[in-house]
Length: 138
Image 1 (tube, one colour):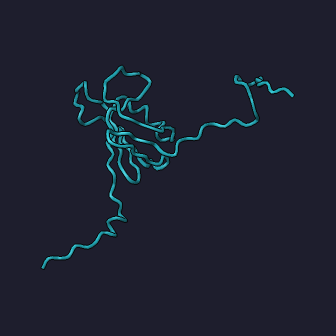
Image 2 (cartoon, one colour):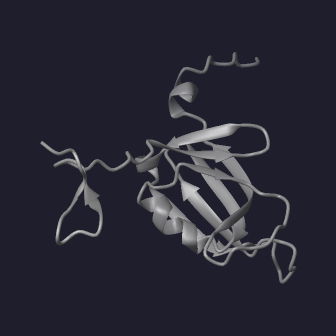
């Protein structure tokens, strides 16, 4: 029996077995800011807003776009260029890691560029329920 790779007449790629596996999509999306790595479950992105950066005001050195991502535990704010290119891969769970690039290098037309990441975690309601009561002053 020959173990040579065969090319199916309808396929442009060699077939080496009867099952072809694709890479697993990432379970988390990592956002790397200046101080830490934040990880959020890829399937828990509930809402997003893509808008103009309110700080831009025509200043060419500031990023023109802002992408706000809402997760159950936090709001993630990305600022950068061509962030519309990031929306599709984010909502489909294909983004594994996002990091900010502060240095303005050459912009690649087909890629989004993130210059700032801000993560605002929510306070868990369960922590508020277990908060010890403060005594009343009389």
